[in-house]
Each structure stands twice: as C-alpha cells, then as structure tokens.
Length: 133
Image (tube, rainbow, N blue to C red; front, side):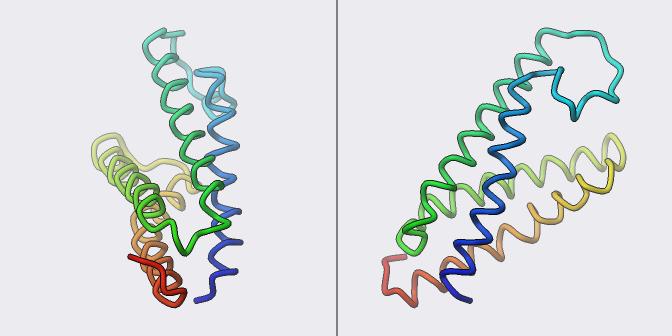
C-alpha cells in the first residue's frame, strides 16, 4: 500500500471528474447525453451545468491534494465520501429507473466499493508517514 501508487492512481482517477466535468459544462449538449431524446429543458440544462461544475471542482481538489496525500486526510475523505454518496444516488436510480449502460455500472461499483477502500488506503499511507488522522 504505497504512497506513490496511491498518488498515481488518484491522479488517473482525478482526471475522470475533470474531463467529464468540463464536458458536462455543455449541459444537455454534453456528448454523453447525445442518445437521449428529450426537449431542451432549461431546468435540466442548468442543473447539469451546475453539477458538472461541482464535479469539475471535486476533480481539481483531488488533483490539488495529491502531492501531500498523506497529510490531506480530511479533504481526501470528504471527496471520497461525496463520491460514495453519489454512488448511493446511482443505486437509487438503478432501483427506480433501471439499469444504466455498463460503464456507469462500473463507476457505481467504484463509488460504492472503491470509496471505502481508497479511504482505508489513504489512512494506511497517513499512518505510515506519521501524519495526523
């Protein structure tokens, strides 16, 4: 459970919210929603852009903490906690709306199972470095 491996994997994973957040700032014109046939609804567009901005901000915060990942326990847990709660939202969508495409199922698994594992990993790295938990 090395610090360097956690940093590298975190940098790769941080690119997901950065890239998808930037794409999502296009609102309902985001290419992810191209197959969805729906009228141009202003509330939907504004919410997609808002939540994409939050997602982008989360990715930027995640990138920011990587150099001192062993000392950023609170921010690290906050980010992964938010991702976990988002995964719960996806689970609710699966229950009430149906099964999404396979890539989204993968992200749901990462959010629900991966979040606690990443928090544990960072805890181990922080403890090995002697950083406050």
